[in-house]
Length: 144
Image 1: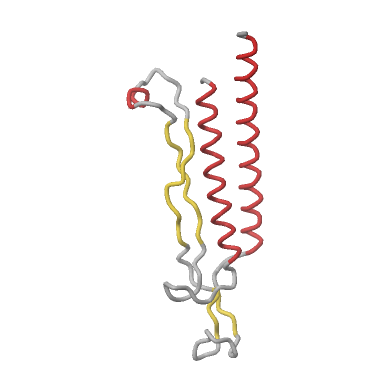
Image 2 (image 1 turned 45 degrees about the horizontal axis):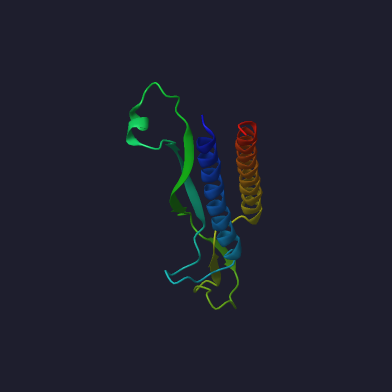
């Protein structure tokens, strides 16, 4: 594995976790949104991650002798299809005939735990990227 491969892998992890943090932030911001342009309450979103080969060319992908390294990529944003949470509030503008309001099915504690996990993963990838950069700089200093 060369320095550039390790940097590509770390940066892909940082990109994926930044996207994950943005999605979680959107979920937290819309925890009480009862009306959306699509109709109904906000639907919780989650990123779908996939490991893809870290190769620079098609030939490297087909090379069976090379040790396979993977980087991560966001392939989709999944929308939660579970039923909304119903809360009795007959005075709310979005209440139905029985007096219930449909709220997003978002658990704030789960979202915060996911945010902490994504933040720590981002920081770990940033640290690995920094270590790769320092090793490359040290190698250049040795060559001087």
